[in-house]
Length: 212
Image (cartoon, rainbow, N blue to C red):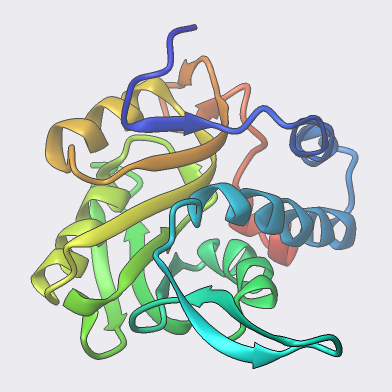
């Protein structure tokens, strides 16, 4: 499979191993939730690659040195509710100083179109790297709508982090937001007639929270 320029497919063995366990329908809610937290930290390394650095003078036990530190305003993590919270928790453990926002969207099961019910974002979005997180990039409709809201808030430097992506969702995102890089652990085969990723892992929110 040829990976588009705007898409990063993370093939690290640990990521792929953990994802396989998550796909298994026999995996419990507790294990699924823990694995999602772990895999999100591994993916966070890739999605934060290239963050700008500056230096500060510190004293090591041996001598003074100019050491690298992150530059600019603290980045913003935006969870696309509700399933995005599973990725958010893991990334926050890695970057605890990040600002956090939430975009609430649900999918109309008949039209498959997103319906907004909540949006709360940090200030100065235009001055931050913004990472939107949602485990599934399926039709791409909810993801596009979420990125629309982020851009309306002033965000210009946006990255999208997901666990699984379908070709249809990748194409939809590229058409609507070609300036937003996508980082994913898997590019699955297709969407089924109900708009779910195949082979996928089912509904990420239901499996994370034990709901149906």
